[in-house]
Amino acid sequence: MNGNFEATAPAQSGRPYRGPYQEIAAYVRNLLGCDYALVALPEKDSIRVQGFAGRDDEPNENLTANLIEHLRDWGPAVVDDARIIASPVCHSGQVIGVLIGYASTPGSFTTGDLERLSTYSHMAAAILTNSELEVKSETNTVFTVRELMHLSRLITMGELTACFAHEVTNPLTLIRGHLRFIDETLSRDHPLRVNFEVIDRASRRIEEMTHRMLDFSKKKPRRARRYQTEEIIAEALCFTQPHLRSNFIETQIQLGAGLPAILADRAQMVQAIVNLVQNAADAMLDVDRRILTVTSTADDKQVQITIGDTGKGIAPGNLPKIFKPFFTTKSSRGTGLGLYITKQVIEEQRGTIEVQSDDRGTTFVISLPL
View 1 (cartoon, rainbow, N blue to C red):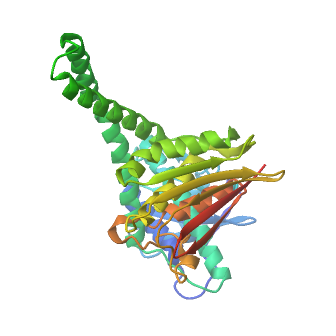
View 2: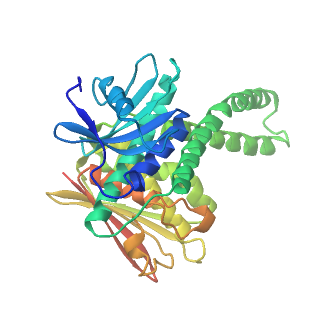
View 3: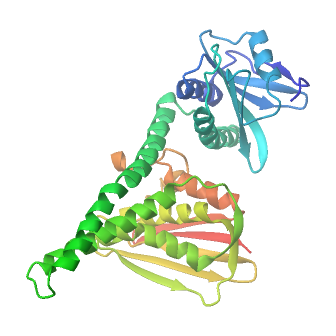
C-alpha cells in the first residue's frame, strides 16, 4: 500500500461498527489474543474500516492510520517487530478485504498466528460474500459470535483428528511389528492363527484409515489441474467406504465410458464429493432400503456427477436453505457447513450444483465445464 491509502470510517449512519464485519473483528481478536483487530475493505483510494474490536469502543484514527501505513501490501504478513499481522480476504481471485491484528508488545505474533489468520480468512470471505448477497436480496443474516466460535471448535476438531491420526501411527507400528513376529512363530496349522489373521486384517484397516486421514487433512495449496473424473470419485468413495459399510449401505456406481478429464482442485473436489456422500449416508439411517448411487456422464461442454440416496428426502420448506451456512436438520450430529462448503467449492471450479428431492430420496447433480 506504500502509504497511498487513507483509512476511513464506515459510510453508514447510526452505530458504525456492527453486523458481520464487527463480529469478524471480534473473532479475529479472540483468535489471536491481541489488543486490537480490524476488518478493512479496499476502495479506490482508501481503506474503509468496517469492523473494529479492542479495548476502546471505537478505533483511534491515528492507530488505524499507523496500522495501515505499516502494511506494504495486503499480506499475509507479520510486520513492525511482529506487532502487526495481516491477511487478505479473497473471493474469486479478488481482494475484498483485509484482517489486521495489533499488539502493543513486540514479538507478539508468530508464523503460527499468521497461518491461523490465513485459514480463517477463507471463512471470513464466505461470510462477507454471503452478507453482500443477503443485502442485495433485502434480507439480513448476521453471524453471531456464538456461530463463529462454533466454527472455531470445528476447525480445532479437524486439527485434533489429524493429530490423532499421526499419533496412532506409532503404537500401530509396534502392533504390526509384533504381528509379523507372531506370523513367523506360529505354525500354519496352529489353532490361534485364525484369531491372529483377524487381528492382522483389523490392524491393516486402521493403518489404511490413518493414512487416508493424514492425507485428507494435509493443507494443500489451491491448484487447478486436469484430473480424471473417475479418479476423483474413486478417492472420495475410498475415504467414505468405512462409513458406508458400517451403516450397511449398498453402493451402485455407473461411470460413462471415456469420461474426459476435468480442470479442478483435486483436494477440494474430493472434499465436496465426500460431503455429499456422507450426507446421503446420513439421510438413509432411518430407512430399510439403503442404496447410494454415483453416476457420471459427459457431453461436449460439461461433465456431470450425480449422487443419489434412497432416504426420506428433504422437506420442501428446507430446500431453499440447505446451502446456507450453519443450517442443519441433524441436531447435534450436524455442523451446517457441509453443503455450504460443497457449493463454494463447485462454484470456484466454475461449475454448478443442483438438488432434486422427494419422499423417495434426494439427488445432487454437479456440473463441471470442460
